[in-house]
Length: 247
Image (cartoon, rainbow, N blue to C red):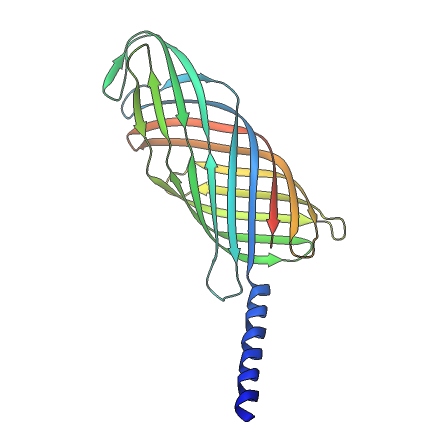
């Protein structure tokens, strides 16, 4: 009988501990649809940068974050950003890119600045009025710059990354679910690279999860010299709308 009571007590303690851990560990999953205007110049390192005329295009981001109560261990967020735009230019003279020298005339480009953000951060404040996260991020590029004329496509792939400072802030109105937010990443080793978004959101409380609807403006600037052999000054910016689920 005593052994049975002991086993029941241990199982009860384990269940209580597991339930408490489940309530303390939180998950966030979200996504944004982004209508971005694209502009910019680029060239192989050492060459004169060429200006391209880009079409406006839709972009997207998805992310997941894990937050926990363990002291000194940062929370973790991973965000995938799809950024790709088609453009064209008329070359005034010869222009070398990759293993080909393009002659004067029309060329096209596919500029792909897609990247993945790996973010470690701490919750400095977290209440109904103000939330503040501070940390660091590594933006891993996995896109490319592609140029082509009638018969000579050339492509330079991007695979390096950028160390960035990270800040996320929210200011809300208690009882209404309305809040303003800013999400900012600033390059440390590439100081002219940044990625920020600002906007408004509405939170709807649920039993198992909360839902956040978001609208705002996002601006990603990629201004780098000799990054994977390419010098570029490109920008994606425009309005976005998205949703985030908080478990």
